[in-house]
Every structure is written in C-alpha cells, then in structure tokens.
Image 1 (cartoon, rainbow, N blue to C red):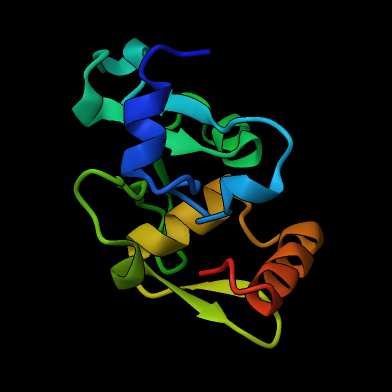
Image 2 (cartoon, rainbow, N blue to C red):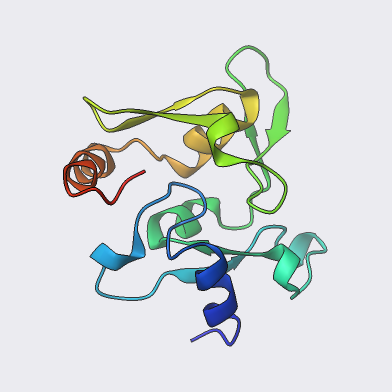
Amino acid sequence: MNPAYPLVSARANHRCEYCHAPELVFNFPFEVEHILPLRHGGIDSAENLALACRSCNLRKGIHTTGMTPDSPLEVRLFNPREDHWHQHFQVVPDSGALLDITAIGYATLTRLQMNSIAQRSARRLWMQLGLFP
C-alpha cells in the first residue's frame, strides 16, 4: 500500500476524488494516484496526490486533458486539489448519472467514462443507502 494512503484517504473522506464513489462499499482500499503524472513532471507530494477508485485511476492513467463537446480543443481534467467537485459535476438522482457543468467536468466525465451502466446503477443504490453524494 502506498505510504501516503492514510493521509490521502482521510483528506478525501474515503471517496474517489473524481467520481465520488464511497470506498466503504468496496472490499479493497482505493488507490493513491498522481494528479499530474510523474511522466509529465508531477512529484510525490501530498498536493499532487488524490484518492481514486480503480475505474477512475485506470481510465485517467497518464492523461491530464480531455476533449470538450463544442470544439476540438482539449481542456485540463478535474483537479481535486484546485477544483470544487460541485462546481463541475451534478448528480441526477433518478438515473444516478453525473452531469457536467463545465468544460472541465465534461472532459473528465468523458475521459474517465464516469457514467457507465454499472456506475449509474451503483450510484442509485448508494443514494438509497445515504452514501452518495
């Protein structure tokens, strides 16, 4: 386990800092990931680390940008140390879907594929249990 896990997970309140999945419902700890990957000049500091579920971490990988819906330009992905989740994402309670509010939200939702059928179904259940958002 990453030595930074206790600090990072406590700071994230044991939720994925991208999709907000609650770590409590998984049978393994979430992953500590580099917001700015080492390959792109990121460092191993608390300010560059985030807690991520396996799905978000695998899909984010070394990416730092994603596409916007209205132009071929890329924008940066959501940064848990700089951005506020509720300014970029909104939850649709009936469907469990996450909606983008900003271009950063759109790029992150798309790049991390945060609205799969399984994820939406899980979110609806988590909401019923009072574990989400």
